[in-house]
Image (cartoon, rainbow, N blue to C red; front, top):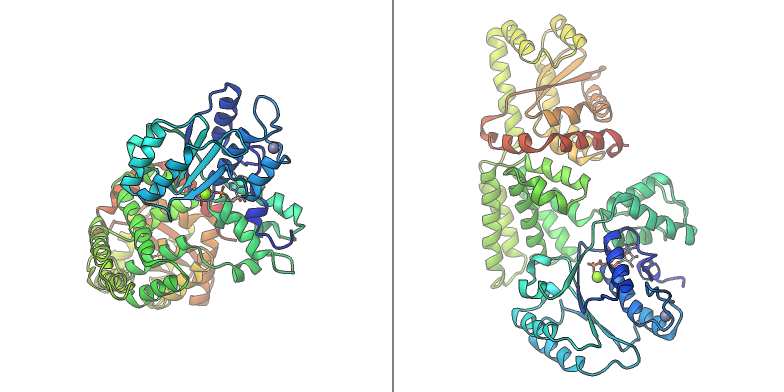
Length: 535
Ligand SMILES: Nc1ncnc2c1ncn2[C@@H]1O[C@H](COP(=O)(O)OP(=O)(O)OP(=O)(O)O)[C@@H](O)[C@H]1O
Ligand SMILES: [Mg+2]
Ligand SMILES: [Zn+2]
């Protein structure tokens, strides 16, 4: 079995093999036990969480010649099971709705369905990506679902239940597949690691699990990719071998938008298209994330966005949202929407998106440019300092006094503010961001809303607009990292102190979300950053 891809070789073959998805398992087992199998199911859930695998297992459960006890546990040895596993069974019909979307496809299905099964008890139809069907095809399917032949079992699978007509939904039993939890993915990978005798560092396994981001399939795929190495798989070797995920690409692209960096944005688009992402898909995914940002900004993150993401990612998306105002998001979505309309008539497919990117980066006057933001604040500081240096020191210390620890305050009183150092840090800000990025790009995103207010002999005092920023920056690992970078730049040992500053006016509307973001999330964020994001 040397070269079979892991995700084929290790596809779960019975409900016992299926990790997690407890509700799904329980529901199916009890419907066998109570003899209440539905004639049509809808498996709904994110990519790579076991829908297709479970559909095939269910096909075996109804058809296995030697199924055990009242739960119909398939034997996986009889000719029926074997032919269902290897795809040669004529009574297991898998239709990919993405490539058979039309009414003709469903009509021919309806004609064939009348015929009795060839050798099994039931004909099982698995319709994958069912949300892709056209309206007419859905209507044709509905007729079949209304009067299904006794010998047929339908299993519809989709990642996007929202696109399925209500009429269909009311005819099927729905089973929800959940995003895989990190420890579940870890369990799945450990099985393979053991079986294949893969030599892998614990830390590297953690990275794979994190990368998989809730998808068993992705986890298995990554492990497959990296296990062709002959040497031990280490965290370091992973860094060199794993390409960024699509989410990371999109995340960085949107970050480039906030920096009005047209060149970087165009480059990122072109790279993604070169790597095989379709233009339309890319635009849709972009719009999807921007839409999430809109929800977050309007206080609906917890309700509408959080359930779609793993904890880590949600945190990243929340932070990303801090780079934009509501208005920015509306504008960007509007530009992309228009580009989408132009796509149909485009002679060069990527052109509408590229123009949109340029427009987004160019015209978005209200997008916060961190550099502008910083220089204006620094100028502000300088003015104030040159006119009434002493007063300014005292005033600032007063404002943030609760937040500053005693030592930092003392050192500030002893050593006057050094404007040069602030400027030095500002000049090196890109370097700071770059250094931090390689450890943790969420922290980098956050640093963009930081304002350095004071620099003394041994301390750098920073202001952030929100308390949750403050807590994240003060997490020991982040603090160490920043202190290290600042010390390098200034050539002496530096400690940081973070205080809560005013929210810049143009970002006023941002306040809503962070205030709305409940404390739980904030604490979770602080914990995540504290514990395992930076190694
Ligand atoms: N619950 C699970 N337990 C263990 N492994 C799983 C599980 N779900 C998925 N996998 C792994 O991921 C692979 C793909 O799973 P499957 O095709 O069933 O996912 P899916 O939900 O149909 O994904 P998609 O929506 O992309 O079609 C499996 O072959 C298996 O290796
Ligand atoms: Mg599938
Ligand atoms: Zn069997």
